Length: 113
Image 1 (cartoon, rainbow, N blue to C red):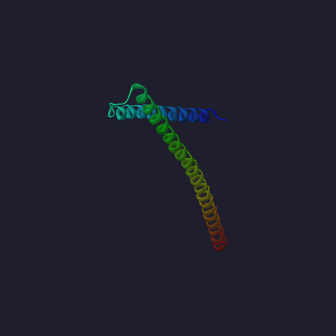
Image 2 (cartoon, rainbow, N blue to C red):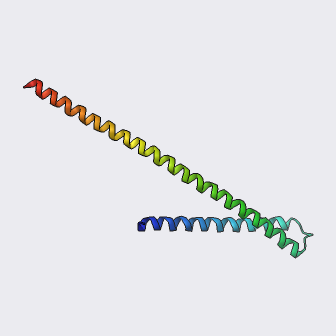
């Protein structure tokens, strides 16, 4: 494994970690705002509602991030395949062009002699 690959993977993991932590903190704030609208809750009830809300949001976020990751990998595969086909076509066209030009030059040389 190349050091650049390790660095890229590490940065991607760090980015994912920071993204998830930011979402968890956002969910905490939203849970607090929600329970603030319910002043009749006891402290224990408030804590339970916030905990359940947070757990639900984290599960939804993880599922969303997993879908995005899977789709990104799928797209990478599709684009890599398309790139390889396009590259092969370009190389074939280039080779045919060089062969045609070489053949034309050879034919012209033979006709001029």
